[in-house]
Amino acid sequence: MPDVRRAAAPRARSADPIAEEAAEVLESGGIPALNPAVAAGREMMDRAMRIVPARSELRVSNEAGFVLHAYPYRETSLILDVFTRDHGRMAMVAKGAKRPHSALRPVLQHFHPIALSWTGRGEVKTLTKAEYVGGMLPLAGDALLSGFYLNELLLRFCPREDAHPALFKHYMITLTRLAHGESASLVLRSFERVLLQETGFAVAFDQCTKTGERVQAGLDYVYQPERGVRRAQASDPSSWPVVLGQTLLDMAQDDYGRAQTVTQSRALMRFLLHYYLQGEPLKTRQILIDLQYL
Image 1: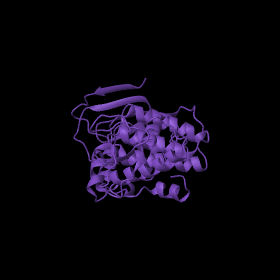
Image 2 (image 1 turned 135 degrees about the vertical axis):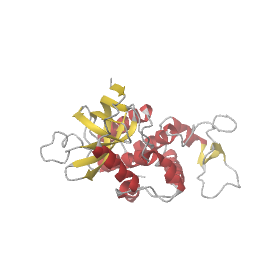
Image 3 (image 1 turned 180 degrees about the vertical axis):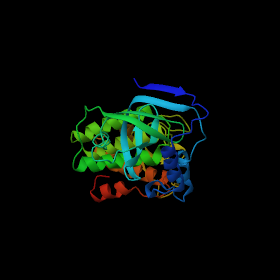
Image 4 (image 1 turned 60 degrees about the vertical axis):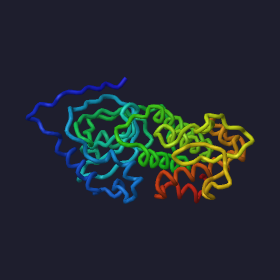
């Protein structure tokens, strides 16, 4: 179990100056990959990137996590974006991690299950220890590219310090399925659905939101953004994918055995992701589309 301790810092002690400077870099958009987009929708998703007021120091030990992205910082350090089980997505500075003989260097790799320890009061914490846990097969080839797609989704949809333990568990399951050679297009559909539901962007796929009625296999439905599933109507926008109830029922059960479910779920998830990202493209998604995985 992770050890979490909050201790009031002495008044005379200031915050870690390197972590404070790293937070200023994030806030100013000095790192292009984290620079908030002009679109209002992205502002909502990246709202946690703003520096938070000073607070009691947080000390966490042996928290399960994964590195989502790493940014070079100064000559020898990295700013990490990590996804943790009990604290959600976190930003932290790894001092000296770029040094050739740093113990952190081989540990802070993508898709490595690691135990993280950190301290800090501001938005950017200071990494104090990271240990490789193991127990998962590495990703390679096409599965590796799919893994980076998962990471990009987490970066875009998960606010900082907002815990999603069920999503964390599903992320681990998804990496394992990819590592064992399961179909990327089917595995990613499952993850996209769980991601949208766990982060509050989507509701149940097997129930009509307004009426509470269970979806019927032989009827046509649409997923109305911000509202949820309902029966399809002739007046619906042409951009809304019409899907059979059987497809929605299959998606809710993670069953992609039907060819029709595969095709219709792909169209539905493309539509929902495009809508909630305000049309801003996902870099890895386009590569996967080109490879016909999405």
